[in-house]
Length: 271
View 1: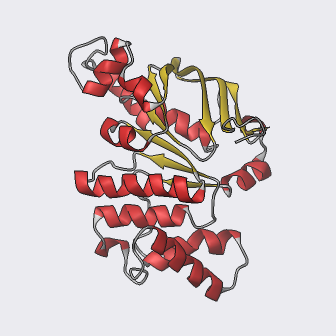
View 2: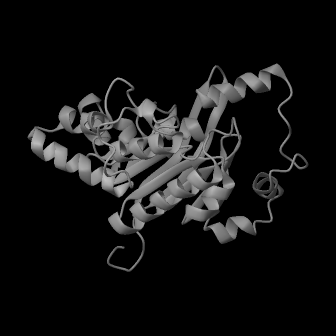
């Protein structure tokens, strides 16, 4: 919180616009992410949430607009500034993105070896600490293929925490997991945010998960923010778009994607 007792915004997105091949994917996005909180960015396929995530991590530059992170507009960063920025956040990819040829220990140690000059003994201690955080203390010598899908996600989260980031971005963290394992991942995200003051940005279409973990929700539709606020406000939103998405109903203002063009446009946002 700032001196006035208000929650500080660590990320501010202003009028973000991005088009591909004449199709507007992000159409003037504005949102704020509060420090130390969990912000869930939700929406169906093709709504723009994956494209927004790529902008937040600096993988894509917008056609126009600004992304302010701790007082700096990352859309103006050069290569060296962007490299320094990427060391300040962690990223949990949808598929985990673990290297199957490396052990659990070496997967987690990779960013420490790449970006620090720490002694191997210290790196070993830090790896154990990160595994402890995700409940996998004695698994460092196994390979990813020897782990379940949920355990792989937890190892990937430990790797995302390796450099003690201020912000962690999550891309569909519960995708492909059963409800029990999804609950474990949800609890980890909440605990890390509360206990370590980590700011979490979770991109998801899993409304059940989002309502369990989020302090704030942002709902996207066709590249625009259609609802934003705490879970209670989203749950009771009078907007039929929001209610249809929450309920997962085929009936409502959100049409089913039936044409080949609509299908290809959805794939564009998920790439």
